[in-house]
Length: 90
Image 1 (cartoon, one colour):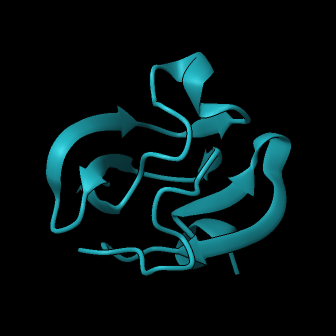
Image 2 (cartoon, rainbow, N blue to C red):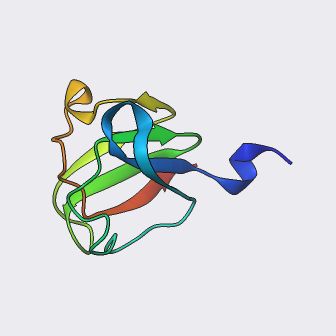
């Protein structure tokens, strides 16, 4: 089975993919209290994803395509600022 069939993106609490990780291929209107404003690194396996500053896809947003983002501020995304996300293309 291809990993792209299972996971479209991974979130990490700490830079350099350290700490808890959250694999998923679903959109979330709110990441929950354990993840809200705590994401520092992301791996996008497939598709293009829009990450939002506020719950329910509100506020500022940042688009990330396939790639490894070990420290979000290096890619224009503030650290500890993500509250929701959704795919915008596959």
